Image (cartoon, rainbow, N blue to C red; front, side, top):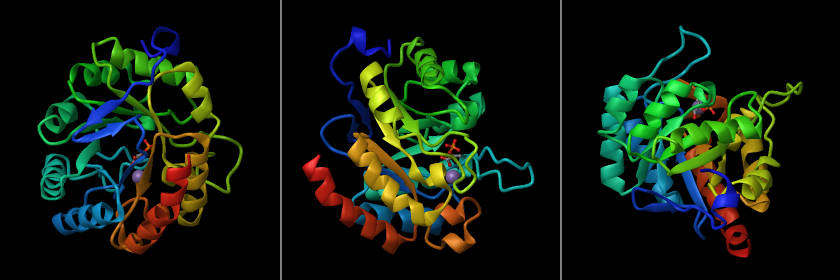
Length: 263
Ligand code: PEP
Ligand code: MN
């Protein structure tokens, strides 16, 4: 179902009022984790002003340590919905369980399957049955074929609306949190008709590397970007070191505008 052989034209996926995979490069932005009402609302207003189309924010956080902040769960989803309604931005939230899916479908426009759950086949099937478009992140050490098979699990449940997200893979390199595999973009474009976006924030874990890799992702042909932003990254409850401030995000959007027109 995901194979280009059986569908030569590109899939265009509708998320809220935004299309992913069409002519326009789309930008998803927002905090790693939903923390409180002001944080989400301020972020939504700032990214909308800068030109983003989709608000991201985690309400269920799959943290490496069980002692780290785990997310606001349904209260977080409600804050995402309020910010989406107030700004007209579409919304995406990660889901980590069946009960998270059951809650999230009431509040957000797109469900995210995170890297750690890319091969949670039960969760993929449930995401397939949810009726919402799915943002499928590449697993920490997943090959491109394993990743496309994960998409296949979702699509086999009758949900063709899958967007892939390259977010870096595990390598021997330690200077960045992961290694951004930009070759995944042309490889996916050749193998599949599904849209692919790039997440330079989780790929690098370092704020200063986000801008150059955003530009590289556009040059490689990505359909969109996911970029973490926070009103005060130093105080973020998760992923502060890779989150952009609002002025940094605005500057980034400004700089890529001409690139988008050229590509
Ligand atoms: C996230 O998007 O906040 C996240 C946890 O990403 P990943 O699954 O790519 O690590
Ligand atoms: Mn994060």
